[in-house]
Image (cartoon, rainbow, N blue to C red):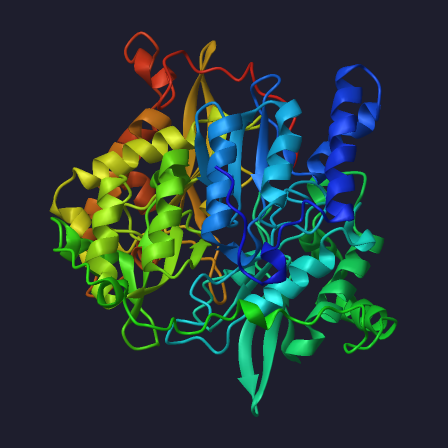
Length: 591
């Protein structure tokens, strides 16, 4: 299937005839063949490969290809192209939506990566700088422009930043990766506190602008971003970001990659000194109206669709299927535009089959006026669905196996790929996430408690926090613990994190063998329900009773069993062999 893009927005145009895109992909393909033959770039091939979004997997000779989805915005043509690449080049025929709104294909042969790039170029999307020491995919609030609390639509500004920094010489060999996110309201659905630069839409005296924070990040040394500006006019955003990058690029750590993020430089210098250097750098840049700074693509602002609902135009009326009422309550959001809704399509642990992507693209074309977004919660978001079309959309999702309800709740567990594919993954985060989802869905009434239902569980396979465990109500990251001569899979539990507004890092609580975690979560939730005060949320309850008391509640799950008494504790979730770290490799700066 070859479907050409039809939107006029620049980011979605066919790039196969663009000489820069074409030369870039052709050059990548030549270097792949040269490297396979033992020549070419040699040791420099690895950073070159990463710069083009192709990341080494745990499995030999297999790659993960990461597809940038700018500000999470997709067209049906784009989703068809991704699905086709999954069908042809990813043996498991799956896509994985990441916590940064990109889509990953796994188990791709290196020689097939250029074929993926060319197919994506037909619809105007790229893998370029999706990995490596560059400005990564720029993320944005998936409800920008349509939520009641939206100040203004940040999508055009995120697009301007994405295209300004793409292939820009200033960010091709930075100390490490650099992450930017936009939020359209004070609710901060873009999670600005955990980004190198976070911009939140505000309005001051009738002027649109951004509140800017810098230096956030997770990983083994998490840090919440600090305030750089209470307000900058929107036209100053590119100069602001560029000045921050230039200071960090000049002074950031380059010998030790574990200390190479902006957050470490900010901690070293302090905000006052960094701000002084930043202001001096900014003064050397051209003014905001200079031609080098891109005008936002305001064609990305979505107008209310003409003609009303599909049902009224076509005369097709669909009766609600079983489960519709719950799905509508938990998976849809009323837009500020009367009569229109946004629907969250829950993807279990972020995975979606190629056939489902093809079908979802057509559902979006029919019922969402072609408006698709990925979200940092690892789901698809369909915008501009008319209220009259919600039963038909739900029925279509039922038919393709994507109508699960309770999106954005405790059932909607987030995970990174973990040890299933990642070279540095310690444990199977997806395996644990799958088991927790099953336990919660089949559990007892405690999980329908409103305050419990709102909890967020996030899981990473190692301390690097690709699954954002630091900002979960209940977070886990994978570790190995030893019992005699053997090792067994385990997770460190964190409680009480948040990635929005001011941000808050979860408190590390205790290590628990992987096989005992579902029972530990069940016990923790039960103790919270029994011991909370009226309206008290789990993070506040845990803080009030203190970490020692939480550890006491979960003490039985901390015990490491002897192999002879519980051999299955030495097998990770979703695996059929004894746990080992022997197949781990060197990391390549994953997310």
